Image (cartoon, rainbow, N blue to C red):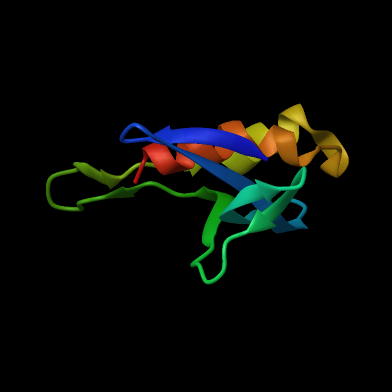
Amino acid sequence: MRQITINGQVFNEKINSYTYNIGNYLRILVGMGKVVDGVFVFDFPQQYETVVIQNEQGSKNQMTGEVYKPSITDLTDFETQHPNGSFSTDDLWPYIDLIRSRR
């Protein structure tokens, strides 16, 4: 769990679950909630956010050569730092933040 500040308001968020396919993708489910009696509880109802770490090819406009979708190689970077799936959920937050900043 961690606290984030959005527009001056403080929120608690936690990784609910993740699925990991070595060499292909890492799919993470993030939700908001609150701490009740020292235990994190996801808010109900809510829409969980899905963040996907994967490698994507960049795309260019074939007429102008302009890149309209940059390549993303987060999974390669992630697997280099955490080989063989040796990571904890706390290791995922910097990647989640990076992907969110691209939206």
